[in-house]
Image 1 (cartoon, rainbow, N blue to C red):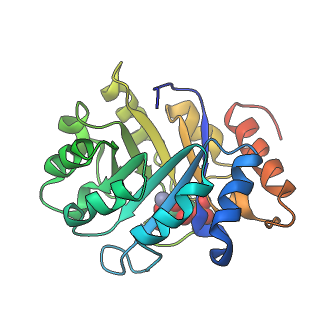
Image 2: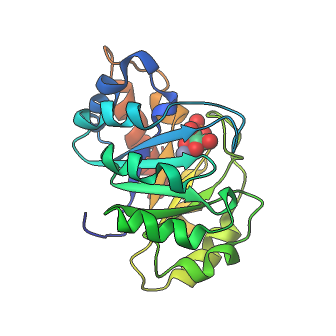
Length: 229
Ligand code: DX5
Ligand code: ZN
């Protein structure tokens, strides 16, 4: 996985048909997705439960590119090996999920996986300042995590601060929550290069009618690039 700062669209399968995950992953990739974003929720760190490492392992063979696993769980450390074995390319843990995020990022990298660190809307950019040399990605949450389809919360100041803090380091800035054609350009202008989108990608389509996924992905990409759609 080579580093580049070109725009990447990462559909969140939280908005996909849960009875058809494998086909949904293949469909969004065929329709132009760059990464596939996989939201793991434990009913403890966040108020909702999604699925765990067994599901990640089951969908892995259906994803040709990057499997981007977002852990909304606490604790994280006991499960790192399970998600690494499931074939995650990136594992992102929340700063708020425990007392030892630095150790968690070290453990993710030690498992041979790229390490991401996520920030809830109420957490300042400074929380990751001393983590940037051991992280591959910072995920800025633009909703309070737990559910898809929520209203976007403006975090452009935080994104700008992070972009300056990161400097030349090979660290992605990913935006997660409420990203659509209306919100994509403000976050990319502020410095984001990975846009997660669930409802805005999957709406209108299905595995038997995947073309709307492609239209939605192209529309978000165009909006993020400042092209009027
Ligand atoms: C929120 C999840 C997001 C979410 C995105 O807890 O981490 O990935 O599913 O969904 P939308 O794009 O619908 O806000
Ligand atoms: Zn997510």
